[in-house]
Image (cartoon, rainbow, N blue to C red):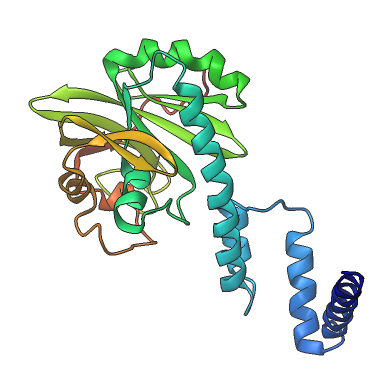
Length: 269
């Protein structure tokens, strides 16, 4: 055992020495210096603009982005399981379900999507009081009440919690003519729908209303809509083909209207 430990120690020293020598080569050294400067004040996994910055590092951006995505998924996996277990002891149990990107990850890849930076959950508007009654338990477990989003009519359409800089989003659905209506929001990249670029818009969308069924995912039992393929197709079209540049403001097939967002406040209160 002593010989094995000694060999490992020697190997680590040799790898460290080789890595330090790489800085002596002009091209490789400059790239490594840029990498070091880029990440010195950042914590992995990176999100948002920091993750985009990581991807732009010459030669190393792609493999580093791959590593960052895997680190994020591992952290999100632990937090999603924690969220499930906490809600299992509240009035919301059996009343919320998995949908959107989280459902897509299960259906297409059998795991969370590596590039998705939030967890998508859903509930009916009648169950909002149950969600609110679960807030103290979620706070004790480290899930910070982060945002409530309101549509142009003043109704709350999304509750968002945050843990480890990741968002856990509960979308509120309303039954309408055999469909479930929901809302989401964002900032336009270019002029569209009679709204100038840079303005925030409200998108009203609908998916088929279905019964909920249990399924196993991430070592836990969740709920989803029975015909998940129908739901995903209504949102994404060809959901079996990955589309990393997906823009829900422009591409979501379930959208029925888009208009300027009159209530862009994002606080929890």
